[in-house]
Image: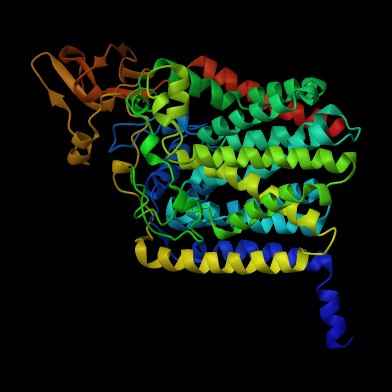
Length: 549
């Protein structure tokens, strides 16, 4: 076989796609192959999570609900409030001897593989052609905001959730626009799996997606009523399979006064949005931090030139729609793409400084839900998927007159390389590197969302590891936060000791109850264990039924 024949065989569509997908993963994962990890905004918190989950698993706590050693030993309920099932992977690696930083880097690579793989699986089914699925994967996976989430922000929950969003979109596309006869449990599988992935990684992304899914369902109300049975079954399966997280989360959220549902939501987030200039910034950079009422020093936030091209491609198609959109099927697809484009614009508007966030300052349920987002630009994750899909749709539609695939793939490929080069360059000299196996004093200043409302974290941070038991005339203050499920027992007698909240939300007991044998622990309510059983049975049951039918 001559060289031309070898090259031709090597670059068949199947091989080209496989090579391209591998190259995407490798290029995006370059920083994760280092012997260290760049200290992004939230990295200390997430490394601490991995460290504490590993410690609790070794101590026999499963599933992990409470971190005994977090906050300098005061204890923390991050694992109850923040979904952590996917964090067990790096935690187990750490238990097996993999250094903390390397366990995290392996997780990053795994998520990048999942993002590229799930995106391609979803997009090729939406566009009905492998090559257009590949283009969609390239645009979505290399979106400027995803670079920022993975490396500069180190927003583990968010960037992991982004891996499942394409599958969720495909799930609704399949349910609303495909007439293929299929058993109902298989038909709803993409929605169920994607929802599980998003919900088990980032609650805020779940809330944002729920809002946009609701809008979509309202616009397509006739079709929604036709597939109402499938939608309701999806909701039931999602609730049951995720009960092990939802039940504890909701119980704590509704009964405990934490920063996340009290003090934080009393203040609006209107100063945290993006300015118009940031939407047209061509590339994001691996540096900067969030600043209120200013786009300065927020180099990590940008729409990116790739998605800007997608926006203008869709606008061009709207202008020339009469020329390119023909037939009932074509018009139906155009209507769906137009709605998705409008939802993308809505997500961009909500992400901006111009959205009336001040109207949602307050104590109402709606205010708390919307304000809990903290940073409006988190809606960029929804904008990304909307513009990526509509951009590819527009280019594919224009290609009916003149094939634009090759030039489009090369163009977006070049943009991806430039974006990666610019971002990684700034990332390398603007951020410190962590290459250790232990986060001292986790989480310190990194996270306080789930501290009891009114806790002065500065006092705890100043004490550091020098925590002490405080003896007063009639009381003893223990260096433990007084969450509602905390129990204090005498290790010798097994009797439970009554306690109350004291200074800085620490546990206070009577002097006569104190001894060196007291033990402070977090008691898991029986209803939580029941929810775990419900989820286990539901997951196994769903898999059996879906496979059988």
